[in-house]
Length: 116
Image (cartoon, rainbow, N blue to C red; front, side, top):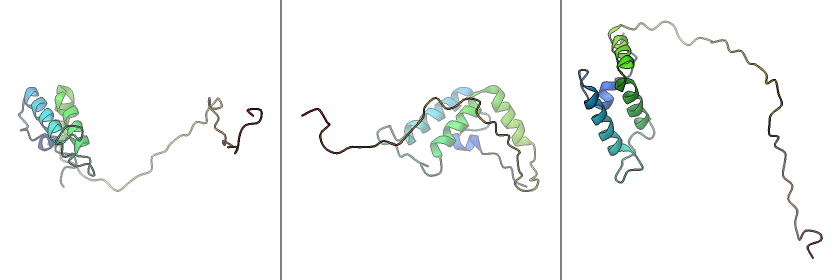
């Protein structure tokens, strides 16, 4: 079965043996290329979350601990077990009333009385 983890090395176009400096350079270069606020930016992947994937890949690979955990997870074969499952959620009612109460706004036509 194929691995379900995203390929962060492929997103940043770096080798799995890349140094921290190479990962930072690749991240900055991709952000300059694709960021919509930069002149000439392509805003690549606006629909598929391209910028978010770049930022997520950098967040995982820049830190030694998260990168090691990601590399370990890549090496473990994943087996899909069943489909979606229900997760119990406990709702706790608020103990106090809300701080702001919103009510309808009524507009009046014409001059205000007394402004003659």
